[in-house]
Image: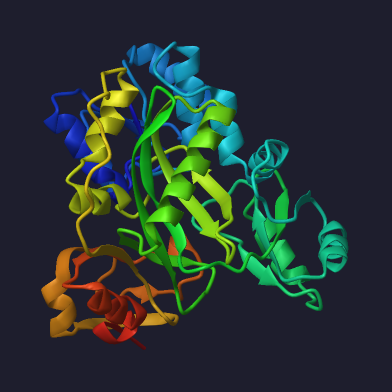
Length: 392
């Protein structure tokens, strides 16, 4: 059973079919494109744990996978645990999917963390920011796709931002945390755990949108951080997995390194990365993470997975608009066209588009291969020139 059938999940549905499996998809959106490729679809929300469990019992499934979906990850763990299928413990997955619970855990276990507090009211948030008296970040503890994330200065009147942010939280809680000034790029990418060990990872560098400096729009691989930094990050995330009890499966990283090379684990998603990060990883390493995610969910042996030599230079890029309006067309430079490996658009000329505020405004995805680091930086940093959306 695969939870969801969105465009970014089509590839794993096709891969499972290619491997000879009978594939069942479910979510509350019957028109999602992935369902046309599965053997069976059921209209049950991926966040309805009891509903998915009842469906899974009826269908007698052999494995369940939440691929590239934060909200579905706890559901997959809950169902698998109830049915004695391969999974990480539900309480661990739930903790890693809730920013407040995760912050509490890593702080209690001796990891570097920004000053942070979970709050329910504007007055609590206001008081904590004034107490710390530094630039802060507010974000819902249980949302994904950068929804409701804002930077706040101590002197700001941010009540409207607070109300918008908390509207994205089902549990009505925000995390307020100290802004960390990073060294180099923020680190993203995917990894895979076998028997509690991070046996594979492909760290990448996160690039942020010019419309919102807190909103990622691209990940490039491999990371440009120095080898000693990469090894230190690997050791820290392995220490975390050992402490928290992660035993298996794909993970997605969000990590910062400061000027002292101290590692700050911001978030680790207990699932594959979205926006075709597994496909990007495959271009960089020749390792198909979709295959291992499927095998892991079915309890098959994944012990052959090892670290791979990374090839250079690749990135994904989230297609997005710099403004609201009607899309007239898209103009690409020859330089970008020569780098293009894959392009998928969710919009056509004449469609209304919105400025890129969070992942719900994503218009599509590209995968690109570059000649060298300089070409990569030139294109990613100036994408609005190389891939120009004409909007009225």
